[in-house]
Image 1 (cartoon, rainbow, N blue to C red):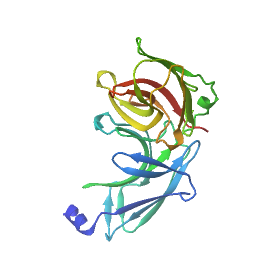
Image 2: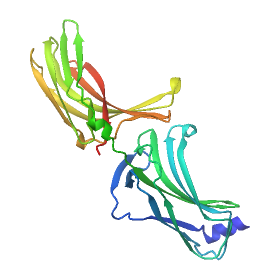
Image 3: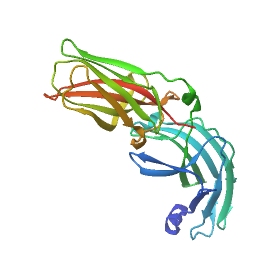
Image 4: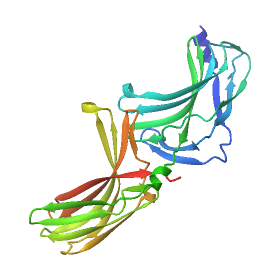
Length: 299
């Protein structure tokens, strides 16, 4: 009877407002399932504070088993929820078990909470931080979730000396080239620069491309799965090069949807970025060489 009455009158409504949201920096994510997200950013020693409103929604009395707010950091494997897990959780009691007869307002604060990992929303994996407010009842739970973002600068990567990346591509007596990227680490708005040297060209090359690939890997051992997505493809050369020719490389990352590289978070997943140099001949045969690079967030 109580459940039927609740359906007729409507569930209580929970609303969450974060303090200073109008002036706080926001960032955007493109989530495969949720679409475009614009989330407030917390970093460093930032606290997260706000106000929770619980509205009766035309009910005169609400019996409950307690009301709580939780701050949760969670890794979600979208194709296999059994592998999903929380890596942090903090909880505050707002109201002990009892009765409500009117709308209530609660203030909450989580001080200097641990920001161990950066937020990530990908094709197969999500690393999210969110607040969950919930009211437990005998016949179900009423809850509200609100996501926010954690961004983590990596000044230690910015300060390390750079090394260049040199690779060779060869087909015996047909093709010999080497290419060089002048850096191995790039910040999110950096420019990939380098050069391609042609020493031997006896095949008819139609064009040369440079692509940036994002590689999401999740799971471990034989159960590991990989999702590859080409983020951008840029034509470096049109037509067949001559022996001795040098082709410059310049690719701006500021227009590419990239995040910092992520290495084996809690044994759950990694995100790698690959530069893929592709040669296409007149028969549409493709010759390619891939090189992993590190992407980081500047301070």
